[in-house]
Length: 384
Ligand SMILES: Cc1cc2nc3c(=O)[nH]c(=O)nc-3n(C[C@H](O)[C@H](O)[C@H](O)COP(=O)(O)OP(=O)(O)OC[C@H]3O[C@@H](n4cnc5c(N)ncnc54)[C@H](O)[C@@H]3O)c2cc1C
Image (cartoon, rainbow, N blue to C red; front, side, top):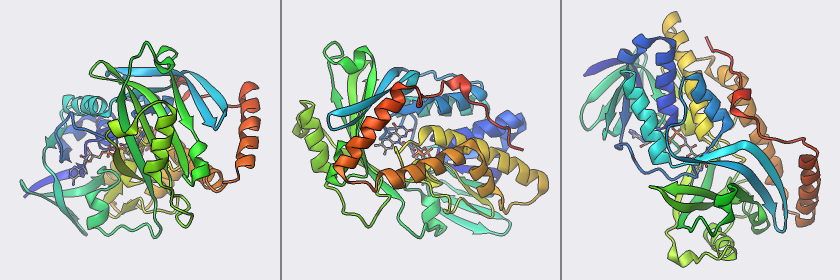
């Protein structure tokens, strides 16, 4: 049985960020942390790949600049039926491929001397007073602290019986379509579309079009997001609605492979920790309004590293202030706002009211009330 101070399950953005932030605080953490990842990087990950300026700013604070191919979007059209408003930014956000981004992050973790075991899936987790036991096919490990960075369908929540009480699961379907970049305006400007027309078909979310490149080939990353933040409301026919939205764009859905994956979203009343255990990234909860989680996963890593350092300094592993740290961090404030906005936005189904909102919003945008913040505009408090 091998002993570690910290075991992180999952080498996605949340797990890698936790390790990177620990080592940034003190390089000796490198020898005290083990990451267990069930896949091998670069591993497939269903995702739109949209990284906001918030995420870029967190990486910049770690001394990192995104080193993988990406499309820097200058505009995002927020549509409802024939109405739209436009966000301008430099960039509004970047679209990248997750397999490349996550593999790059994992290589940065390794470069700092952190042990990362790929192809080693965690099968079981047991929590005791003195630590946590982690079981894989390859062996059994003991950790003084366990970080659950294992995503929306993670093993830690399941094995430790962490329940939300209510369903906090969004449904998503994604499609990748090859495109001729010369023929598509999305690649020329370049821009993304968030189309909220499916709200009229009971979808609590939107349809998206993100231009991207896969191994140098232009593709459109398309998909539909259904937050299900009001689980009692009628369940939308998601696949059929996606088909309609694609057909409107001249894409034959029968030629495409549809891929689905859930997102576990944030609720301020949710469970974020147990004694000896911290949840980060999707395991803790992503944004329910847009289903955004990459930048938040990076931010969770920063908070978790602060909590872990404080726990070892004090010899107190209850993590009773982890929730407070999350809620008082820019991440917690942003996710709370988004959760509130999602509850309000996705309870309106009256088309006339939605059209009125779109007209008012486009005026507000035109007057400069809403604008994405550039990456260098974010300043983070250093958590102790
Ligand atoms: C269709 C879709 C589109 C999306 N589009 C966007 C977008 O455009 N922008 C955005 O910001 N967010 C988007 N998201 C959300 C985003 O993908 C997640 O929020 C983000 O991946 C969370 O990062 P994470 O590190 O918490 O989890 P993950 O990225 O899911 O990483 C978890 C890691 O844990 C590993 N793991 C899981 N179980 C085990 C185990 N038992 N043992 C060992 N390792 C394990 C996995 O292999 C994985 O590498 C999208 C999600 C979906 C489904």
